[in-house]
Image (cartoon, rainbow, N blue to C red; front, side, top):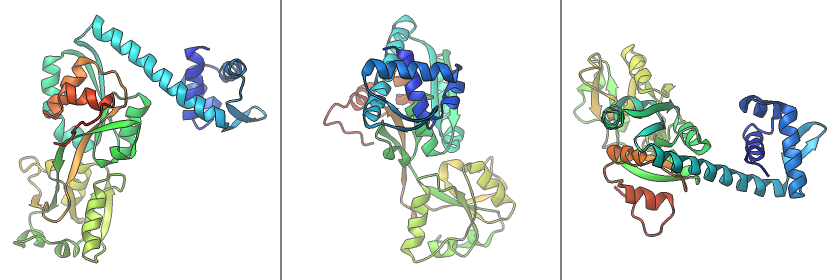
Length: 314
């Protein structure tokens, strides 16, 4: 049994049983992948995949169990590499963070600046996507950690640690009539076309629940993954915007005005997602604590390695 055979096996599963796609991803040939998987099946004495001619069409029951074990073995093999790197070069390496546009644009810049000053030899990478995509990046190993809102709770492969709570504001052009209201209400917001986040963002559900509680249906005319896109179309007069308060800057957004809406919507929590049992370089612990000071190395370590009776709350 070879590690490479396990990589082939897992990649075929990731690519929806498409051998050609797996071969392209791994920069090898389709016949080579087929041969190695056959050799592995012969060694184990079971068929991992169901085949129809040369096509792989399903995973067998023993294949499902073998795939889970193979993923764990590959994960631990990566941990071995990380452990060796940690001791050979403690202040150099890479850190890839998967996150949403709002976090990357408004929550992370100062933390990344401080981190880069402390660890100038660490190469940083940001992968942006919606919350579900950021979690998938971390689970697949494309990112070391992910930073998103409650969507992380839907992935058992990740430990989720709360960082901070946030709420929303309503933005509008300076002459918009909603800005003349002394008290902002759901009923008042419902009178106007609304531009807000796409349904891929978990925080969108809090907005919908607030309208549903009043028996109202919001007139959402445009959705986006990006706070800056929402503000752009609000400024064009297409509607009022509902977005994260952190995404409004009075100095930069001088063509808009904002009203606090935290009394109308349930707050959301930004969390860091870390693959369970992951080996984290020392500087990753430091990054996490810079972003969320309550998440000390001990708290993170205990959570990632499943120690009981841990209080993860802020």
